[in-house]
Image (tube, rainbow, N blue to C red; front, side):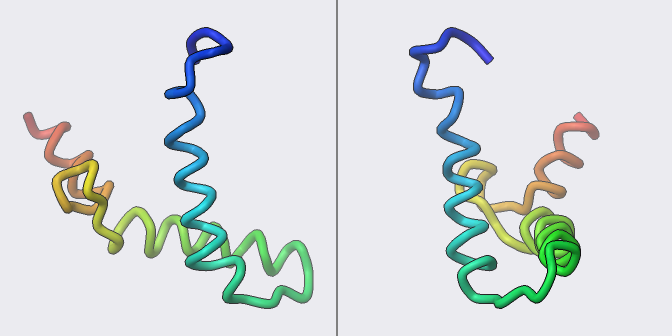
Length: 72
């Protein structure tokens, strides 16, 4: 993180949390916190990182983009 006034610090996380809320949390009713935690982790690891394409990574999944960077 850089200085306090730098708006770019929070922009990626704000975008992620908006996506999480719109695509998952607002669509699901959770009975317990444990159920919510498990579902959110599964959504992040199973869908967001491995299936959902992102324009910022050249329309690849985060896992594909990371593997490309590691191979280079």
